[in-house]
Length: 171
Image (cartoon, rainbow, N blue to C red; front, side, top):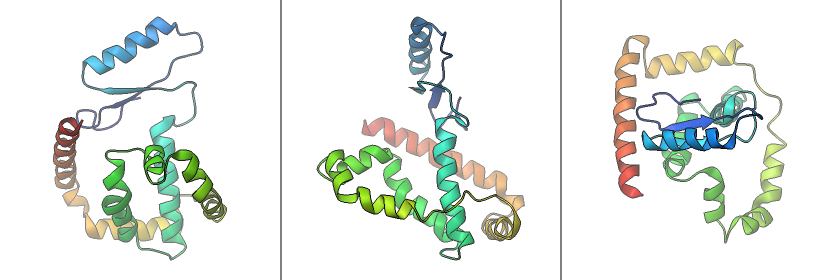
């Protein structure tokens, strides 16, 4: 699976079948690297691929925060753009945790129970419909009206291009 827009977001998920030869997997990984992509190997198939599953988990909790009246949609987006997104542009969630303590073992010892307690409050997966869908849609349409979507996409792509350049220089 390739991520959109692929010319700025280089991730490619390689998902071999159980009968795929290891040489084919290696060749596919190498080819993706040669053309400037960042392949990751899925060890087995899963519904939704890896990126979408992580993205959907973020959307689900974001949805709950709005639906439960805890935050506005705009503030939820700010939590990502000016919080998690800042560090996740360079580090994944597991490496972030590893660095936030003296390694992952200590992170789990110090924060594991607290994280578990928070996770227990998440509740059922939300359906993306109904009054919350309408409220979030209205908020987003206020911030980015339909007639400005193309302009906003161009801005997004420009930002992604700058970030991609920054990341390549930072490595």
